[in-house]
Amino acid sequence: MERDRSLFRHFGLNPEQLYFGTTHERYAQRIQDAVESRLIVSVIGGFGSGKTTLVSAALESLPGVVPVFVNNPDRERLRIGQILSTLIINLSTENPKRDAATREVQLARILGETVVLKKKEVCLIIENAHRLTSELLLALKDLRESLKYRGKGFLFSIILVGQEGLRDKLERYGEVEQRTRPIELDRNGWMCLEDRQDYLRTLYGDVIAPEVSARLASLFTTPLAIDHVVQEKMLMMRDAGLKVLDESVFPLSLPEQVKALRVSLRDIERVSKVPKSTVEDVLKGKNTDPATIQRIQQGINDIALTRAA
Image (cartoon, rainbow, N blue to C red; front, side, top):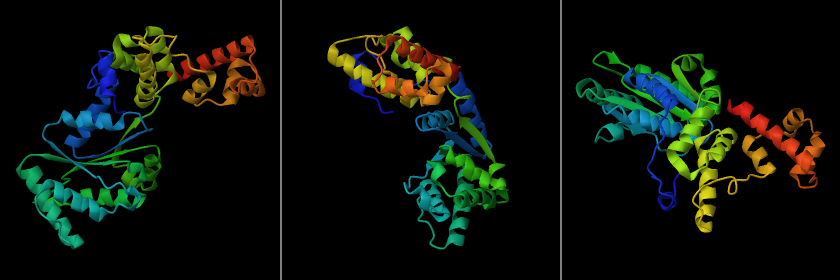
C-alpha cells in the first residue's frame, strides 16, 4: 500500500520503513536460490499479501541480476512473441527481428552475451501471472529450455507473481507444474500472528497501543489490510489531535469485524451458540440486547484467535 508520507511524519514515523522478518527471509532465500539456478518460481498469494515486496527485496540482494519486467497490462492477450521482444529491448540496444524464428536466435545471442560473457543473471518477472493463459505458461517453459548459446542452455530464470488462479493454470500442464518451484503466501505459511504483531511494531511503533496491535494482528491477515485500516484511523487521529491508537480510536463494529474476518453467519452461530437469525438481526441493528451482543462478540473473538494461530 502506498503510504501518506506527511501522515507518517506527523506521527514521527518513517514512511520508508520496511518490514522483513524471519519468514520473509526464508522465502526470499528460496527466490534467490531459484534465480541463481535459473529456475522457474511461482509466488502465489492473495491481493495485498506482499508478493511484489517480497520479490523486490529478494532481487535487491542479488546485485548481479538483471531483472526484466513484463509491463503489458493486458495479460490475457499476452503472447510469447511480446515476451521475446521485451527481453531483447531490455537487454540490448537492438530492435527485435520481425520474424519469430530469427528473433529467437537474436535473443539467444543477447542472453548468451549477458549471462555467459558478462557473467550476469537475467530474471524475467511477470506480475498478475494468474491472468496468463496456460498455453503461454507452457510456451514460456519451452522458451527457457530451447534458447542456447555456445551449447549452454537455461539462460534465464522466471518469476511468476500471481493470485490463486495461477496454481490452477500451472497444474493444467504437468511439465510446467513440475518444473516450477512454488512459494505460496497463504495463511498457514506466511505472516503468522507473531509476524503480524512484529510488522505492526516495526512500522508503527508506539503509535499503536499493545492491546490494539494484538486485535489488529488477529483480525487482519495481510499487510495491505493492516495498513489500510491503520492509516484510516491515523487520519482520524490527526484530525482529532490524538497521538496513540488505543481502544477509544479503534472500536470496530460487529459488521466491520465480520467483514474483516470474512466469516459466515453459520460460523458465528456455531461458535457463539446464538441462532443465525439472531446474529443477522444483531448485525443489522435490529437486536440490541447487550448479553446477546456480548456472546456474538466473544464468538467472533474466538474465531479470530483460532484463525490467527
